[in-house]
Image (cartoon, rainbow over all chains, first blue to last red; front, side, top):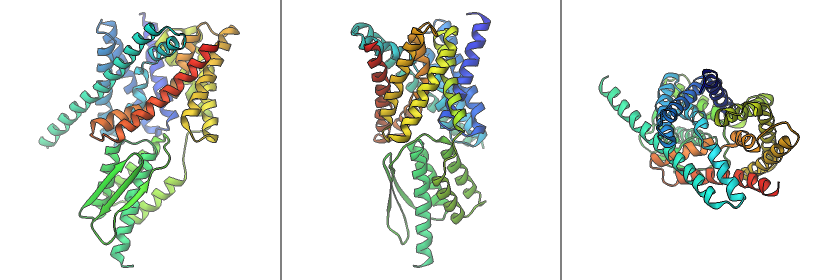
Length: 149
Length: 251
């Protein structure tokens, strides 16, 4: 992956996250932060995949990062957390695999379709589990904060 | 009617309206419960009992009035309203507005929706499609055609949603339109890969709000509302899939 390609990917992720935020009518002052959280999650995913960690672990780490970063942003901006994490997971959605699954089912190639179905399920599960883990981090952090004040 | 009874009525009305607006516009259940409890607590009710589901809210406070029900009939995605309710609730907790003002502003918020201008939404749909196609597939030459197809697909979805109240049908039609346009675009030599164009163009239709909320609701222990949202996301995804599959079968 060249540097130019990398920059194109980061810009694309940022723009797409921001634009998805506009489609679901996120308040203007939350848009920018949401975009950067999307980039953060995607970068973690991308580097894990490049480092040989595999799609599932990459999505898991990306989702954890998004969940933790969203809570920090929510605290900082005093806004609900879902304003930040909903647009941010969009770049992680397994769109390509889901499309290949539908296409192969439609064309009658069931065994290929099933392998893509398995990927979609694994990736969605990884994202959901990532959110669970981030919730764990957030709750622990809240506990520690409360004790130290 | 005694003044205490009036006050209790107003507390219930405010909390229930706030809760309904939040669920209608795509909030997770835990936040709704939290906000409504805070409103009742800040308004001086000693105890409050809540039963919040994705299709209706039931609330009782101690006092002279009984429990009240607020049905939730429609569901859209307008996260700004959730943020506004959140802000109002914070202002009320800080005693910047009183209960009557809070209630009036909620009623006002309920009746107007302040979306981004239409052209900006169209542009946003294009800018979700094109960049994500490049990010997912690294196919730079198809960037422009994906932007156009994604924008048109979202336009179909937007226009149909105005006339048909069933969101899944609009999604199905939009996905079918995207499929046809992608095949047509490649046929006319405007793009190289039907697959890549479709993958990018359906991204604005992805049910991001129900997916996220479903996970968060299930984790928070709302075992009725969480799976219900999951079904919503699944039916949306299936509608998009069928739309695409139908086109691929015939072309």
